[in-house]
Image (cartoon, rainbow, N blue to C red; front, top):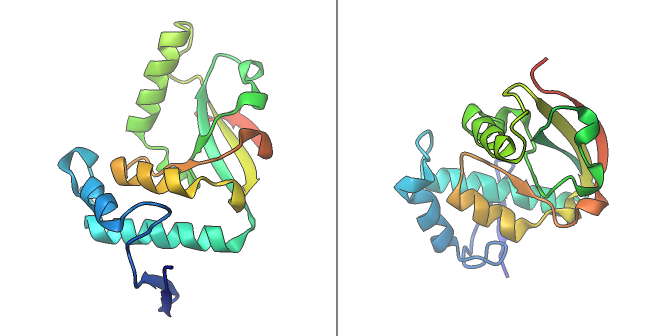
Length: 166
C-alpha cells in the first residue's frame, strides 16, 4: 500500500513501487527519455506533479470538466455518442503540435476539412471514470500531451461544442 504524507498541501509519495499499477522507476525512465520531448521541467518533478494531481482527482470522486478537439467541416458531423476517450483538463494543453497532428489525421479521413475546422468539445464525467493506469503511462511516454484517458465514453455528458478558432 502507498502511504502519503501531507506536506505544503501536496502529497509526497513515500513508497513509489505501485503508481496506478506501474513501477515508479519505469515511469521515470519513460519520461526521462529524450524522445519524450520534456524540456521545460525536470522529469522527476513533472512526474511527481502529475501523480499528485491524479491522486487528488481520484480521491475527490467529483465530476470534472474535460476538453477535446475534433476536426470536421460541420458541427453536425460530430458523433457525440462516440466522442472518444482522450481529453485534456485544461485548454492550455491544446498546443500547436497536438492541433497539427489532429488536423493531419483528420485530413487523411476527409480531404475537405480545413485547418480551421476545429471544434472544441467540453464534457463532464466523474473522476471515477478516469483510467488512471493508462493516463499516467501515456503521460510518462508523452508528457507534452498531458492527456486524461476516460474509461467509458458513454458515461460522459457533453456540455458544449463550439468552433475552436473563433
